[in-house]
Length: 89
Image (cartoon, rainbow, N blue to C red; front, side):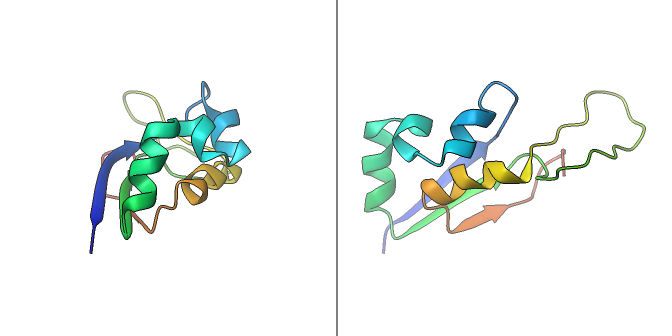
């Protein structure tokens, strides 16, 4: 079994459209798609909450959020598991 563990995969305002399009090659490129397709299990860190309504707590620094429709990018690259172990969730 081949397991691929990636790092933070983050929809941001600069790439929302790429995530929404759900096209793995546009999102990460041909070479990485080939590597992803060879893995039996693909794990990434979901660096931001996916939510359509922002209701941030009062804190220092930005409140990061990405629209729920950006999940199409995670599906396109075949993410089997997403971790939530980070400081933005």
